[in-house]
Length: 453
Image (cartoon, rainbow, N blue to C red; front, side):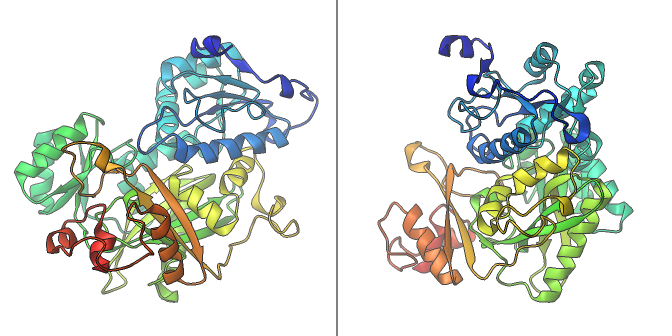
């Protein structure tokens, strides 16, 4: 059986073959293809296994047959008892097209497998495969996904509602990038479109550094964004949920311990935010709701801000119209099942009609309030690689993370440090690593201990 799975033949779960064919489903989708999290690499796979597994459970609860395509055998979502059929194939347009032709699903879920699944769905949409085979995309429309991923369209969409983003220009060549950087003014940050984990991104203080970054970024994406650097500003995130009837809530807000310039996956993240006053919190919350409504997101999404620490000036960094690694953190931190609810919303339910699975009494149309603090701390294994830089920045290098819960920030971060550290430390203590002015300016994976020293 294992050999047949590797050859691309579907694994059929015999436990789930007692389908109730006559059961009515919301949105008239009786068979749904779920794009999985893809192969194991930094920035994908395990981080999106949670959301995919929850989506499959939500679909099964509605009597929907599920077909999963995911080459990663080391995931929960490919385990027997979840999806009705599993194809252990790459999540690429070529293979997904073959699965669609073989299975003939009514619809497709693209927002539960991270950037790999999202890019695949966009490619299928642009190639006309979904229209030709009569497959609908559930949840957030593909046009909205493209609007959040294409940096040029994204900037235009935000300008329509007078929301602020950093001065930026979308380009497709190194020559255009140099012109854009000269126009905007150094320092700038280079971001690649349609990429996960900050792949190909970085800061450039001059033309030489810009060319080096753009060469790398254009190798992984056909479009890059040259953006004014806001390094040093606070980085804030909101997890937002919206249904097809425009009911919108913010489930959780998070604050990065590191200022802007460090990828979220590389930074210590605290929920709820600790340094925002109520005015700043509500300002960013209302902005998040306005942006998500304007973009037409249906389900769950993540919006990231840069906030000036000395004023109320803010800029929107990006919107992820999918379940992200932050979504898993927010779900576990608040007890609100974001992925499960998002899958139900994709089928056509609205928030007031869904029951809160925690309280069993109230609806899903509520915003959780936390009387505790959650700290997410990344873990690196850079010591296993020779001659690799230990500096952290806008590209992701961490291979895992821990989550700690406490009544105060101090308690939570102490727990996180004890869990993630290789030094057998008691927590935030001096002397674990020597003090270094350079590591304070140019952060490495040991900076939290440098700060302690």
